[in-house]
Length: 228
Length: 346
Image 1 (cartoon, rainbow over the protein chains, first blue to last red):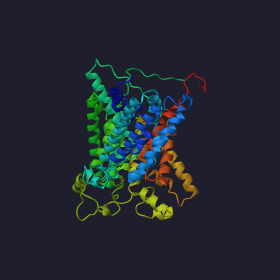
Image 2 (image 1 turned 120 degrees about the horizontal axis):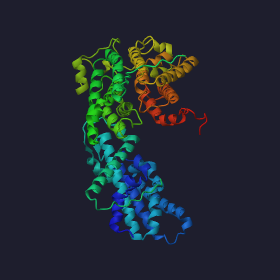
Image 3 (image 1 turned 90 degrees about the vertical axis):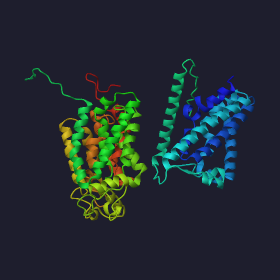
Image 4 (image 1 turned 60 degrees about the horizontal axis):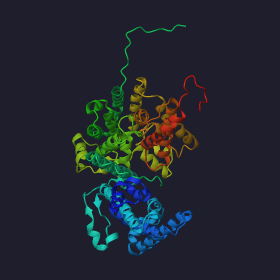
């Protein structure tokens, strides 16, 4: 049995969905043009992961192994539909910006990966914590990448925050660089690939530094899923 | 039959990276001078800034990677990358254009892939493509070539333009910039003007664009010197110019009103610079003799396609990068037969 702290550490860092498992790259690369877009999709994915992990862990003894994958997909699809309709009702502007990538959360292999690899084999409490930490790790990557691309690409941070936090948040936008003509590459898809590559490099660098500092501590075994 | 043998002492030819790069840099001189003659001091600033940034970036990265700094810098590959990028930039570009381009070329396109000898893409062209995608406005402001009767800037005025982006009060930007011949040809052809009508515009010279034809001729001269020195393989420029020539000839013969002439394509834009100096980069190009021909021909065909139907006026950089991607596959399928092995050696 994995301990709770290890579940959290795995999700946040050592088995991070975005940086280590490299799952869910399609939304990761596509919507991280701005901080707020990343935050919006990250929260939606986080909610989906927690809910799907919890429900699948609850029904894990009822589902026959032969039909488990279709059942998982049905559960995830219903959760995503609920989230999609609620976003359309309460955050309509954000919903229209994120567009197809909200329904596409269904196909995010990080979610079905956690359902199959973890939730279907563990108790409800653990599955919930695992869903939360995995989802939160993914959210972190989304907002860091989104923030990076927004600063380099447009010179602002938290632009269009009103889409998430209401009209009062319009003033939240920081203009970091005045009269910035924009670095279009960072906003375009290649910028997402380069940015993600740099983030992974930074993570590996930090890992190596930490490892060197505490040689006695054995390297945590990371399981890397090769599905996509 | 007589087989003459040379007697000793045998002098081994000096053939290292540094010497190759030096030869290429020397061969660039006529073209660069010609470019400066037609487009003014801005070309010089671009070259200096791009080269200085490339060298500084290379030194920094080498230090970070714990590699020998001085020895690697002396091979001149960073200098050449900077020069090639500088030659491709519009002469009135603000100073940060060559800086961003050269840093991207050296840091991302060269060293993140492992440094000299490991980069799959031509660094100078990666830098150029990053710039033209990210800063379309600054990257399309070409000043008018000498001989168009437009006003030209003095040394100091150009310096102020490069560093501060300010022009003298009496010369707004519109009076010194102008569409390049490739730009003009593309937009006029799209407005149903015939090629004969377009050619009457003073922007076009006797065979290429005004100014551009001599710049290309100068690069051709430098390129022929490189061939004579055997610094580059003849297959790549031959393939590229041949591919571009055959494509443009085919369409020009089919409909000489709506397609530009082969001579115009060969002597406009970056054709000659690309054929002899950029596509021939020994690291990112194909390496087998037959593969080099295909590699060059692919670039030539891509340049024609991009110039004629694409969204950008010139396509050398995109053509080179796309064929860089194909180079390993080309090499795989064109491996020469090993001596003594059967022809169909699976």
